[in-house]
Amino acid sequence: ILLWRQHSPHKIHPMAAATESEVTTCRIMSPDDANPAGNVHGGTIMRMIESAGYVAAMRHLHSQKDSSGSKPSCRAAVTHRLEHMDFLKPIYIGNLAKLQARVIFVKNASLLVEVIVKAEDLTKVSESLCNKAYVWYLSMEVVAHSRCPLTSMNPVIMSIDQSYRIRRGGRTCVCFGYCILHIC
Image 1 (cartoon, helix red, strand yellow):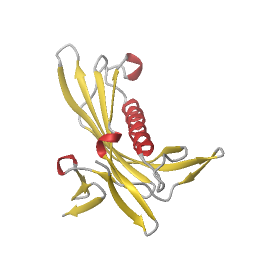
Image 2: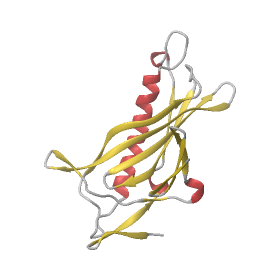
Image 3: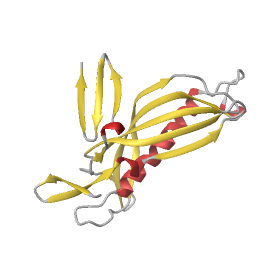
């Protein structure tokens, strides 16, 4: 189903389903990724989060069509900032790190990507939630080897069960597609 939302009196943009941007990546953690105690470095996890988020952002950008209905020219996503990251449990050498990333909010040239990291102990066949992060990306249009920020993108369509909640300074922010509600 293709839905449309009007951004300006002159342009009509298709809305992208949240599932179009979802990506899952896996990697077995090696001794090079960890400290002598066997815990994977936080920087290694952050690098994997940024990479998975980038793929989700790029998938979203390339699923878009411009106002004429054709695929846009070359677009790129660049990391703007890490909004929030939780280190819930350690990941150890030999664990399989699973990263699930998806675009959960889009406005103008900004995309918010949620990345969930789980670690699977392959010897015990158990899995646990280790990290959760929210990363902002900016959409850039590549024109003759220079990058220019885009002025707008199509919003993300999410069902109620795909919405997310994050805690920010005592408030819960709930995102439903392109609407963010702040709940005290």
